[in-house]
Length: 358
Ligand code: ADP
Image (cartoon, rainbow, N blue to C red; front, side):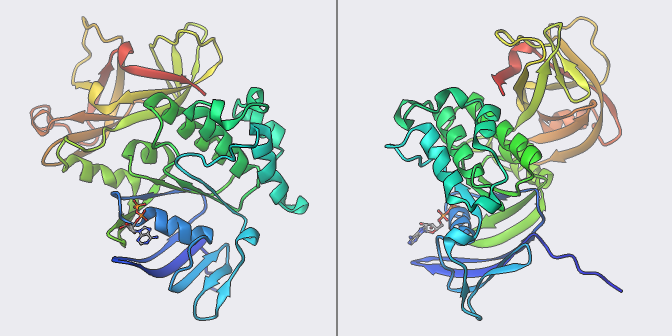
């Protein structure tokens, strides 16, 4: 007998808002799914509908097989009972409550039977335990976002919606929060929908992306396929692609990332410490032979997995034991005859590596 698998989240919704129309349908598995697209595409509006903050004109939303909205059957589950939490770009912490009170607020909202996550352990994990008596105004941007994340996660949500949570942070803090999101997902198994217009964050977090354009679904595809669009965009105004990893400092002061060790300068970080590492795709070079005399300290042997060539750039995905995305020109792809299966060497300088705690 054929068995049908119920998708974790399924929606088909329509909403008219002034000149703008949202008309989207998709099915998401659990795990992390990205919603990607330019400003004004409808990403926040979609999240607002899924979170129960905006009521669509028509359609339905089903979460884990349960109908939480259906216009035809007049079903509209109250916001509080949905078990869906949201984190916004600017954190939206209560300014008159301390960090600890902000996090307890989320925890106390949750029915005791549904509490799966201990706020104290969560604070330790997010390294904000020392901030509990402070007020939001005294926090840095990165700290504020970690607290906002803790407040939402403390509600033990069935689904966590993240609306550009790192957009206002600089690259180091952005990497740190992205890394925490990944670890929270792995540790607590909370399904997430991550809205972003940054390809690097999306590549680091989610296997698949729903791409919106002018209120409609442009595609629902593996995130890796979005790289082809980037290669076809002019450099001005387009996103740089960063390789983003969580690594561990080794006893010799290198950083272990998956199956490879990279030579870096993890000043201030001790052996065994976990760090976030980012290397821009445009700071990495490829060579067909192992260079003998070169100033770049990192030379890793790898095999090309995939090559995307666009009008303005090309990207090669190289497996060295850990995957690197390398940005090159289409002329370089041609002259080196780069194609899947080819052996290459990945080269980058220690100074190209950005390291952040976490
Ligand atoms: P994104 O998150 O992709 O940047 P939004 O969902 O914020 O896009 O906005 C989608 C469109 O809806 C935009 O054209 C925006 O101007 C419009 N919009 C958002 N909120 C409202 C509203 N309350 N009333 C009318 N139009 C709105």
